[in-house]
Image (cartoon, rainbow, N blue to C red; front, top):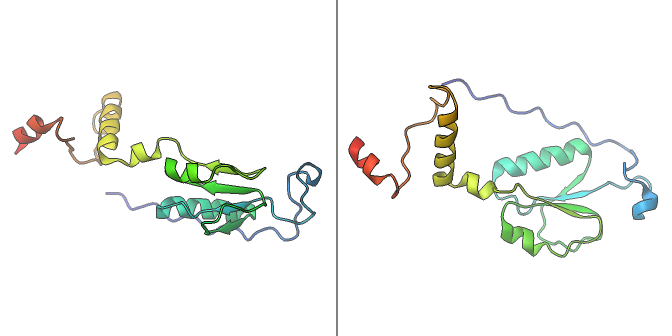
Length: 148
């Protein structure tokens, strides 16, 4: 198999004394405050937390890993599950929730196997040769037994 790709470079240091890109007149913040706080408490997977942490650091935004959602500062809450999304409601003004729709479906092994199989039907032979032969049980039990 090919070697894994190199890790991404470390994020640049946050900008020093740079004014927030959002107009202070619109949201009441004072000059020099960070635009957002990025709350990664609900990022349960290491890859997603690493990604959100990298983006926050690259943009000079403060990252928090605290369960409290009562901040008055505009915040971006990074969530993976619908339940985590719902517990953040209602949001304070100027805050957002970032969630990849259908991420739990893609992470489910059975669903992922079905998606990969569909994609294989659309591509040339050998395009997905990195993927081992997979059966989704119980719906493919007969096929699995035939191989045994």
